[in-house]
Image 1 (cartoon, rainbow, N blue to C red):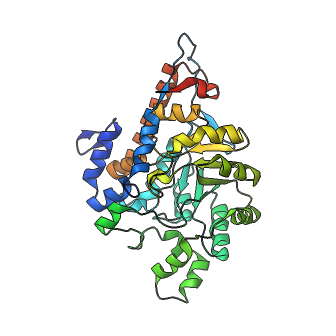
Image 2: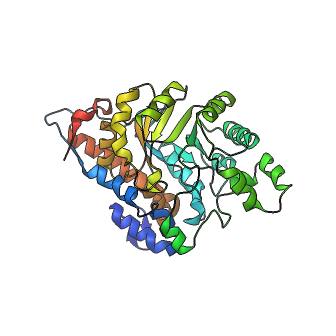
Image 3: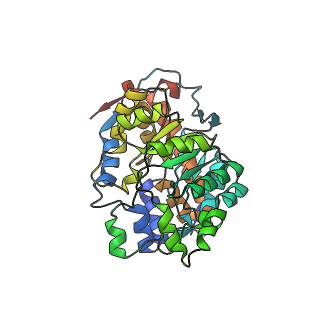
Length: 366
């Protein structure tokens, strides 16, 4: 067990969140914990899990149960990926470096954000574990090619394109606090170290002004995904899919997978809970795409429900970030260890002999 300020590292998510809150400045904690608008989507993500109940089977041999899965052609210890979270340096000075090391030690893939506190090359040098690169599709084709090429050369094994951020969500708590790490110049490491962006900077006196020009791409459309497919051999996953219609278009576009996600409730308030989108998407695309799930995972039983509804693996976000804030690399690793153990116990008690067995027959709505 990791020890933080003479306190045993928390097991309960709620205690971990409270301990992390004590470690952060108020505006930083609010930025991490909050959602957009009235936070209806943020609440809906958790309420959706509570509306599904696991139906256990007993007198089943679970003695050979393994949580190992293959995702993107690589075997991992559990169907868990560390979600891309930008600017992790605001909660701990080692930020993504500590997180990537912890993920590697637990044999789980780490997804590095475009707006990391450290460059993708620095993250790659720090960890030999499997790493994916999350892409905020820039409004500059030369910068796009540069970022993707750098990810390839640094050894990242997939590109995750976030498609739900044509502009920033209306985040009331951040606006009330007057806090924006983006406007404070955080999360710019991948841009500052980029030759194309540096050339843009030669024509401008302001880093932030250039960031604003290229970071958002409100015109992002399916043709841009087709173009991305043409310039990289890396597998492509689209993060932010919530409709069966979009999932079908994704399947027909030649990409490898999707991430069913509403950005953890941080973009569009009042929209569908991610879990409520899973079933219809699975029915539409079946096994044509790898289906990953994001938004609201807190415990092992949550993962069981998401897998039963059609996910091949899940992203975990805020829990590991709270672990990072609380105890750095050790905190992240503690969160991952606990989540893996909780998943194994939950599967065993549900009578699941193999993860491949899970489907909607294992759950029912309350």
